Image (cartoon, rainbow, N blue to C red):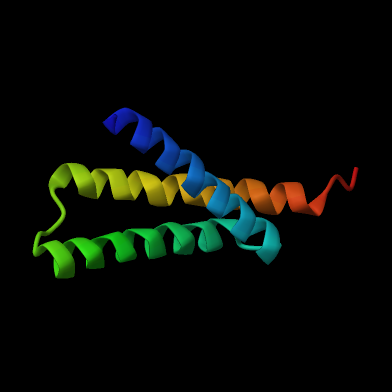
Length: 86
């Protein structure tokens, strides 16, 4: 079950980065990174304030990967929203 949740999270965050990069039309890496960071911040605040726990090393690595996948989605979103000029 954990692998299914992880795969769905990666797909969802990639899509979120793709949409934010497509809407922004520039600096997709920044917009995607901001989207991933915002997601990680919300999860961290829920975990810290609601459950009184900090991220483990494994969770920290997952959230770094989530932010990176959002950045890749943002970059792709910017590049596909411009269309081909050749």
